[in-house]
Amino acid sequence: MTLEMSRLFDAGLMVLLVLCALAVVRTKDLLAASIVFSAYSLVMCLVWDHRGAPDVAMTEAAVGAGVTTVLFLSAISKTVRKEK
Amino acid sequence: MIGILWDNFDYAVSVLLFLIGLYCVIAKNNLIKKFMGLNIMETSVFAFIVALGVVKGGSAPIMEPGARPPFINPIPQALILTGIVVAVSTTALALSLIVRVWRQCGTIEADELRELE
Amino acid sequence: MKRALVIVLLAIVAMPLLAAMAAMPRFGSAEQPAYTHVAKRYLERGVEEAGAENVVTGVILNYRGFDTNGEVTVIFTACAAVIAVLAGSRNRQDQREAASSVPESLVVRYVVRLLAPFIALFALYVVLFGEVSPGGGFQGGTVFGALLIVMTVAVSRNQAERLLPLRIRPWLQIAGPLSFLAVGTAGVVLTGWYLGFPQGATAATRLMLMVLEFGIGVGGATVIASIFWRLGDEA
View 1: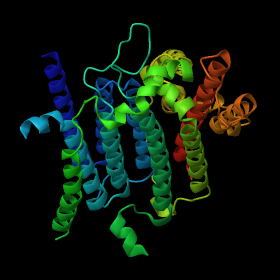
View 2: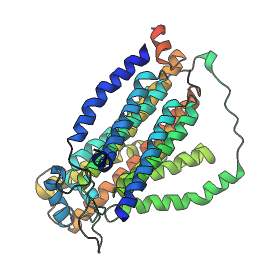
View 3: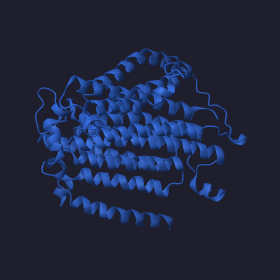
View 4: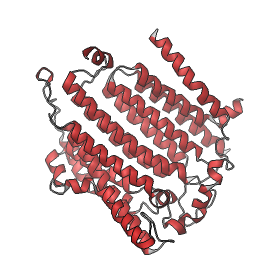
């Protein structure tokens, strides 16, 4: 029963992942898209921690949700914010 | 069929995310957006490989006192750690190239760049 | 028209992927080939052979040290390439936008100053305890790099840059590859192979792993901060 619960939790996270990915693709505002991408990375980090990969989760939290987002924001501030 | 899908939905979601990322790379015009799509593709592949190492009821491969087998396969995790670092390197380089393109051409939309020649 | 083409292409990509998925071993089964060969040995003898309780760290630095050697070279190369790409390019006059005037927030500034030592301590902890708990050189380095970025944004760039003096910054950026070179050479002396580790969890192995973790951490932090500063430079 506990296993099933953990599977359900996994499934919820997966739904969230797909929604975040779709939101990244759909959003016209690049700034908003990068923030949603950060959320996507954070959900991915939860998924990996739940799958018994704490090392990978930690890296994803620091790199995916932190540094990659910052680099995107930095590039957007140097170029344009709106996608045509 | 439903049972197999439920047991393997981690793989199915990886495929789905890969396709979403691929769609973003192909169909979007903005170069920054394309790279967000590429990042989604990368993480989907990472998620797939991490899912390959999972063992039901396993614990993280850290041998502290009191840890009991089964342990989760450490090799995919080690490969993915390297992969994430390489992914952020490519993202950094790509974004710097995009900034450079913006400074040179004044646009980062792929079709406008094609017209500029 | 274009949309239809894209959908057809996605379907073509999806079909072999889904077909392969159907033929995969079930999720979480302990009989799959990836788990029954080399992983078994790593899990059973990893601690005494590689000298790290965290088997992932042992695999990264010891069993698969060459991979990681390549990885640190990649991030160093990326840093060098970013600096080279953005060197000497000028904004065209007509696109120069007025610098955005975000009001400085006293609260954010104060909180960042307050938290900075603790974040730095956490980064150091993640690096030093990478062998026995989740974490490792690159994770800790990234946390420290993120601290530098936060300081740049919230306090001032000069203050953040003072932590990595320009005089020694190139050496910090290449710390990862250099530490691998040093440990690799030590391996040649001790065992006869590049990046060879002495058998068993000896003091020498621990020291070599520590040097590698620290080199990766320092290199990673410096590279990340340098890339961010370079992207933020006004042309």
